Length: 167
Image (cartoon, rainbow, N blue to C red; front, side, top):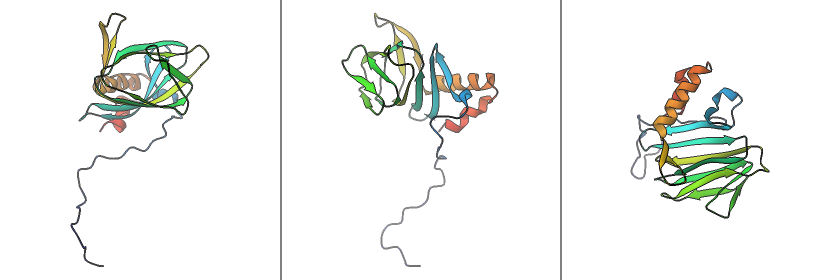
């Protein structure tokens, strides 16, 4: 074996375990109900930075939510399409979406779409608001974990099932 020719980067012993799962699950119990006709599939909850990654699935046309993010959001549409009432673009299967922090927008699925699935990478929280900007709800990585624990307890997967997504 030859001697290193420069600085050696040591192997860390405290690196969190990786996550490698099928994004679209075989078991429908993994989808967590969020609202009528709306589910999310957790992929990763970062409890240090407050980031979370999930799939959002919507199976009916109409408004999904009006909300504001204090942090950046990235999305990739896997199936179907959706748009924001505040913008003139439509995000369709294969589209990438960047959402700047601070904007209030109203996510809607159009009438000609029977199912939408989008991957979202969210940093921070979601503050749900009404038409006047009054906060009506709140989600962050910790409330999402709690939703998963309750759902997985109820459907037989067990509260600890969500632990595989927590880092």
